[in-house]
Amino acid sequence: MRTRLKAGDVTRDAVLAVIAAAPGRSFRRAEIIEALGVKGNHSGQIAVDNRLRELKHGGHVAHEARAYRLPG
Image 1 (cartoon, one colour):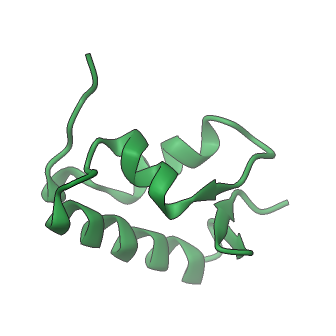
Image 2 (cartoon, rainbow, N blue to C red; image 1 turned 60 degrees about the vertical axis):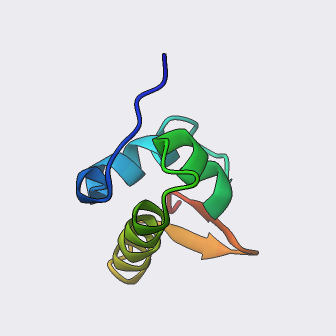
């Protein structure tokens, strides 16, 4: 059974956990949304976008070629 998050449950830690689950791999936005279970939930997808933007600007994730990964 998959866990479906609500928009308020999409935290920076939740997004980082998805990305950190496979070090060295890059994740597209759609893959992160699907892994968090907010596919089809507009406010949840906006929350993911906001968290990704925060993580990118804070240097916690690297962004290139429309994919996100841990730096280094």
